[in-house]
Image (tube, rainbow, N blue to C red):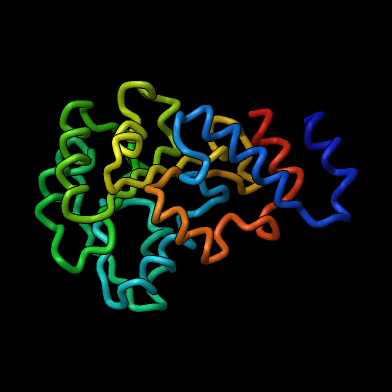
Length: 218
């Protein structure tokens, strides 16, 4: 609250690059990654557009029912969702997701814990799936709800640090209660992060000063 109030006194000015860079460095230190791997913003929708532009007609493998922002945003450019039903425990069906990956897969995407079922995959199986799938395609892991589970054990950030083809998305909308400010971030491989920023994702003009201030405090 106080940080947002202070930032509100500067809303007549555009956000500056150094403000974004400061939060980027803070996130990079927290996640123990290179600042160049951090892309700030609610990036799932622009990520879908970016991937669809890279390979028109590609597929996004995902759990259904599920959160479809990535798939919906890719659709206007020909991106096609490949829905994989949840298993009998209403968890991401990791073996079925792995089988659905083909040469036309843009990413395989999962939310863990899953939205909408609230279930979380078993830790060892999850990490095995991510490591094996990342050898074939980009793996997008949405960790919007991971603070409600075994965060340190289940986060896919270890795979990004290991140099695998994995993008981890986090949002401050859930545990930090900042949904109205639309602020989050992705941690991605260096080349992918560079491409996303080159496409304007995370640019200062796409962010607001109150959101940056709230994110820094959170």
